[in-house]
Length: 247
Ligand code: PEP
Image 1 (cartoon, rainbow, N blue to C red):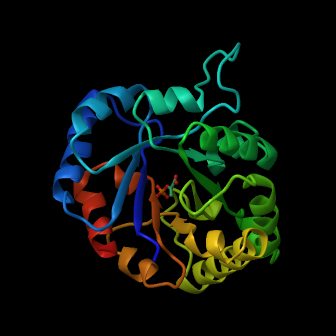
Image 2 (cartoon, rainbow, N blue to C red):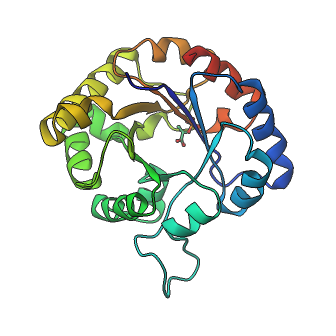
C-alpha cells in the first residue's frame, strides 16, 4: 500500500513571513493520513525546521549538487540540505533541466548523492508540447526514467514526478487519460528494471497546474499516488483542498 503524498514546490518564492502558510498547512492536516512535503527555498529550511519540528510536515530542497562539498560556489550539497532539516529534494525539475542545462545523467548523480545523504529524491520528468505532438511522449519518459533514476532507488528513497512541461505554470492540465497512460508506463518500467517490490512501492506523482478544482479527478486516476504542486502550494487556502482531495 503506497502512502499518498502531497508535495509542494515553492520554487523561488517566499521569505520568512511565508512560513505562516507552511504552519497553517501543517496545522490543518495535523492528523492526515497523507504525507505532506514542502520543498522550500534553501534559505528557509532551517527556520522552517525550527518552527515545524513538532509537526508531521516534512521539508525538502529543490536541487542539490552531486558532490558532498568543495569548490562549487552557490551550490548546496545533499548533506547540507539534510543538516538544514530537509528529508527530501526535488531533482531534475524541467525548469532546472532547461535553465541550468541539467542532463538526465546529472540528475542521476544528484539522486545518488541524495540517497547517500538519507534524502528522498523526487525525480521529475516530462515531455515538451512538441514532443507530445510528435507522439514521442513515452520514448522521452523511457529515456528520462532510465537515465535519471540511479540503481540505488527504492520505494522509500525515491518518488517519480511526471510533469508535462507544457502543463507547468500554464493552467493547462493533462487529461486523466494522458496522465494514466504515462503513469502506467512508468510503473511497468520500474517493475521491469527494479522488480515488483521496488516497482510497486515507488510513488508516482502528477505535476502540472494541479489546483483545488481539478485535484480530485486527477487523484482518481490509477497509479497516481499524489501530486507535486507549484503555484497552488504557496498558500494554505489553495493547498489544503488539494491535500483533502487525497485524504
Ligand atoms: C511544478 O513546478 O512542479 C509545478 C507543477 O508547478 P504548477 O503546479 O504551478 O504548474
